[in-house]
Image (cartoon, rainbow, N blue to C red; front, side, top):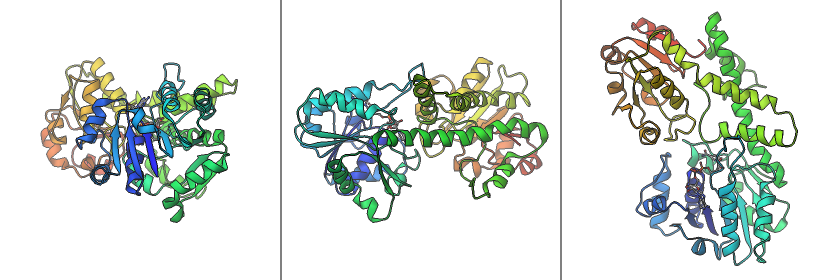
Length: 430
Ligand code: NAD
């Protein structure tokens, strides 16, 4: 099929590349010229396991092309995906300006029946608004379908190839046939495809992200209690997770959820519930709890290093989770800001996210490896559970550090083992 992805970020590039890998003819369109020029030159703008090979293979074989021209990328397509960003406005509302700009541009260039698929995360009712914009500007036939994306950064390619479910919001039989055809490789291997109303599909996305954020905040809300009483949150999670009704996933205490989705999507829910005069207290609590928790790690450091001025604090992990270079809303950024306010010197290491962090904190020290980061440090804080930190040589770390303090915000180490090596240890909720 002839497909265009509007917006070539985490969602548009991964899905576009993977659709081309299934044999479709895909154009990835973006208004960011530098991004498109880099992609044409074979440079992948994001780190995502497995993506580079798929992009290069399909670009070499001519199935995947990159463009900044709506004129070239819209005419003659069967399916056009909207995958632009929907960032958060200061009020918490989702900013839909990129979505509506894309809709206007589609209306200008569409010239045959096209299924326009809304893949970005958008408030309930947005597909209808997009339909109104395009309908008011063209007489060409089209359908708007909602198909929210559930891929996880760090496992995005795998998630595209083997999704838990595909959610399609449409009541049009004509659009349904096109979408069934597009996702046939998935239905052939029994991946569930659920058809529903557009509004329902739009809400499935927000409800799913809010549920995951709730599980994280639920466990993090118990961490101060565990720290006061001697209970271990890791064991609590294990004990809870074996209950079939609860299940083990997403029960880890952590530095707090981050990334480009959970924080903004929870806030967008608050906004659209409150705009409809519906009580949003539950979702507000999840958001507030997370923000509070993200700021609590400074005190964990202070337990061992009470006066932070001119002390060197090493941060291991900058991305909001492993296997991505995305630092948006990462708890590491909150902590670095607090440490700088206290006059501490920060040395940071991350396998993939240093370049993105430099855009926020150009003047902190960045290290080539985790050992360099802890050299002469008063404490090290594990913020992201990259494998390299799990398998670190702790004896070498001990020799390099000025003071032997480990604050393990991902609970990746065994406290008894760390203490037996001569470190002070603080986890989250243990
Ligand atoms: P992103 O910021 O990585 O990419 C968005 C891209 O859209 C940018 O390259 C930008 O230049 C481009 N763009 C903006 N306006 C444009 C326009 N008018 N025409 C063409 N291109 C335009 O965003 P992302 O992380 O890929 O997220 C996209 C959407 O998908 C968001 O709504 C997000 O909430 C949702 N989503 C993201 C993820 C994720 O893990 N990143 C997962 C599921 C859903």
